[in-house]
Image (cartoon, rainbow, N blue to C red):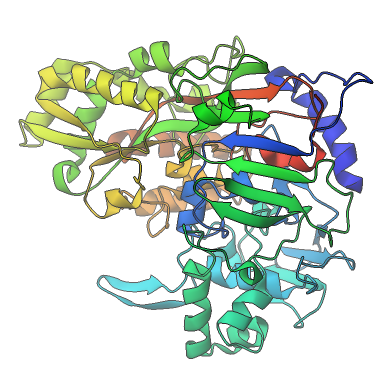
Amino acid sequence: MRYRRKSVRLIGALAAGALAAGLAVGCSSQNQVPSIGYAVDAVIATYNGGTTLGASSGSASVFSRVLTGFFYTGPDGQPVADTDVGTAKEVPGESQTIQYRLNPDGVYSDGVKTSCDDLVLAWSARSGRFTKPGDRGQVPLFDAADTAGYADIERVECQPGSKDATVVFRPGRHYLPWRTLFAAGELMPAHVAARVANVPNVVTALQSGDPGAIQRLADFWNSGWSLGSGSLEAARFPASGPYRIESFSAKDGLVLVANERWWGNKPQTGRIVVFPKTADIKSKVADNAVGVVDVGAGSVKDLNLDGFSAQSVPGRGAEQLVLGTGGVFGSADARRAFALCVPRQALFDKLGKAKDAPKTGLGTAPLNSRIQQQDSIFYGASTGAAEKYRGADVPAATAALAAARTPDITVRVGYLRPDERRTQTVTMIAEACKPAGITVVDAGAPDFGPAQLTEGKVDAVLASTASRPGPAGSLTGTAATSALRAGSGLDFGRFGNGRYDAITDQLVGDDNSSLTLNLLTEAENLLWAEMPSIPLFVTPRTIAFGNGMQNGVAAPNQAGTGWNMDRWVLKR
């Protein structure tokens, strides 16, 4: 891509400390490998990264070069403009206004042009504006992971089929991280939704408020792009990026091939096979089927990376226990009791240290925040409330349980198996908490999903940011913040606090440093008091490139190291 070629050189240089692939330059006797295997511990469950399922399984780390957007997450966790897709710029107006222009050459792999219809669908689905009656009041029609930024938009001006859109925010609202909107992995093909939902076009249906049409669109948006074990209906999955889906199965993985209609620079390797967490990654690596590995450090037992250039680096995700707010954790006292016995320091010392972490900042100590990065300038000054929760404080935990009037509780901790590091994490927590009268049960399972917390099948989820099993986190922290907001799809523990929601609204609208520090400190104090989750450490990532790989640049964040897979070249 024109922009990408330039940005890859710049970003590769910036990320070299994290790991820029080894990147042996091929000798003249070497031949380029036509297909590269990519092992990543995300779960391939849906094409739609904007749904709760898509965001919590990690769709963006698989499909960001299949479904492109105006921005993508770069290797340091920052939003980067993708000008092959189009341009987005803030323009003067009474309210915050962003002007989007799609590339005139932009076309899906099925031959349908990209259009502002896609933005209207994304905004409508993610805004929370369409609701229906539920057991506890109105609930969203669209199962969106979060509404961050989209809920602040008043309107999207779009003529059906046009390449231009103007996004106008509500009066009095200013959304600083607007570059996270309409991003890679989340901008879905509106024409497919319209066809399957039997709607002439999504713009007219959504603007007119036609309830029947909107319900059909929501039903499809929620589940119509799911990727199950059955055959793939290719017409539902057109691509807007350099790769498109050829096939998907649990045995053979996700096969991506070059999109013949892609208008940017063609992929340097014509075929990428993605092996997700549910695959036998150890065997795939042993069978020489993998050229790039991006997994949680220590998660794959006895993983042999001979023949790879590998490093263990701190990621942008937060390894944490997401707690329910009902059942055994119906009181904050009970949640605090559990936090007091969880051995956070010991867990970091044994399981959380990335071998190649920097001397200061990211990954150098237990994580004391759910919503900030350790290398943030505000982190140290705002997280003092965490100090009493270094862990393994049995007397304090026992006293907190007594205050909760629950002297003995059983905590079921769920996570996606197999995962050796998380299995060890649960074992260490169980040993530390037993003397305090807290019995910890390992509820990890191969089919585990974080929705089991909402359903009451477990009491805590062990995962990274947004309850993802694999690549997670970003510099903007949108998913981390949203996962604790009332009504968010990612709020699996059903935590709700009006003051926290108000604080996070202010944080995305004002960049005054003094106000930011004050708000963050208040938020951190509130969260450590209410304890909706327990941060453990920055999730360490093992990222490895096979010998002979070129142009690989590690991305230990929500995008995963496949963020630039269209530039990969493997020579053997």
